Length: 113
Length: 109
Image (cartoon, rainbow over all chains, first blue to last red; front, side, top):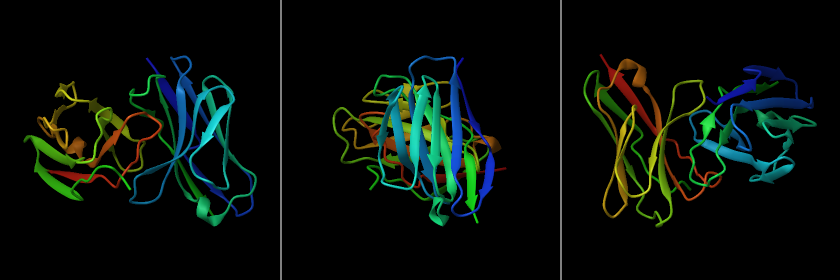
């Protein structure tokens, strides 16, 4: 069966520091991969998605970037964090067909001080 | 804006069927309806999705009206562990889903 791993679960970072969140998927090949952010009490906002190695689409202009160095690895990064980057970050995967549902990791709660 | 509208919150008694409505009056012919739920501080969990026909799996049933303008998610025998925020989403591809605030479902003993 397929599993998705996302870490760390919580992270506290000072303003201006770099960020690297990692997500890996097991048990499937060539998945679509996604990064979302969720503000408290709100729905999910899609940040990036990837349909293959090195292929990244950005949905929202921001202080963040994403990379997919391997088929089942997706990384969310920032060179300098802002206070507004605080939130709950979620990684997800889906099959390649457009209607296939997404499956989420347990998320990273990021607090910027 | 999300393409769907849902009640902000609902209550249901434990052991009864929980019926969660969703309005998607502007849905287009090739857009699916997806349901997810999110328990506090966890990632969303996929429940079910459908295009035109009613669907059932081990978790729930999805009833889509004939005109496809609304749908209902049915949890047949709600338990306390079903307390969560339930999201109804419509989209024609898995990278174009717009998430609203969902329905907070509280199951009461």
